[in-house]
Amino acid sequence: MKSLIIVDIQNDFLPGGALEVSKGDEIIPAINQLQREYDLVVATQDWHPSDHQSFALQHPEHNLFDVIDLDGVAQTLWPNHCMQGTLGAELAETLDQHRIETIFRKGMEKQIDSYSGFFDNGKRKATGLHGYLRSRGVIEVHVCGLAADFCVFFTAMDALELGYRTAIISRATKAIDRGEFMNKKEQFVQKGGMLL
Ligand code: VGL
Ligand code: ZN
Image 1 (cartoon, rainbow, N blue to C red):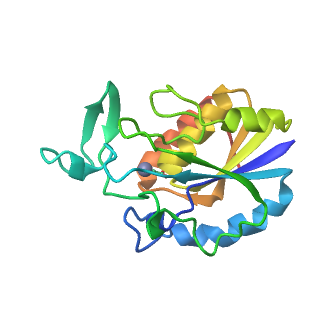
Image 2 (image 1 turned 180 degrees about the horizontal axis):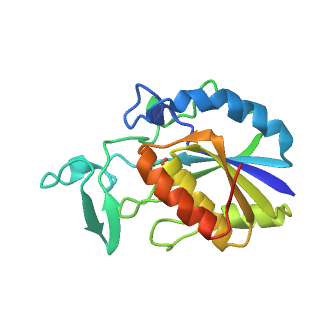
């Protein structure tokens, strides 16, 4: 069985959003098309409390995009984004959701961020995505969505580590920083990941 994981197609990551990914909206038609090719389609949703410690405003002594130590884990400081219950946290209206069986939320815990759809950044807690995929007989996962250099990359790296045949679908992802994604893509391929 083969699953498509649609990562964080949320208003705040689209042009005009709080943490916009340039041209992030342009991949949505491709993602809508892709869904029909999979046995199982799931999605992730970044879902932060308003005082989440990944928000720069929670650390007045630091600047946006600084990297700090948060409970022993390196943390980039972001603008407030994907706050629970806000319009920015909703999945994009143009994303076709009729084949999405389950949405895995992440980043709810104030003290730790969660880029991957499988675990938080300290690998302290699992989201349940691995158990869900396993119970459905999934052995191969393809990852798409936003942002390529953060949540897509870390989701794909965890999938590889968990033993799935794993691909990132290049035409269905966009990066916050393209240079950063080039480096990370290399790491992913070196670890056995496929780029489609
Ligand atoms: C993401 C930064 C912070 C992402 C989420 O979805 O890639 N990036 N929160
Ligand atoms: Zn976030």
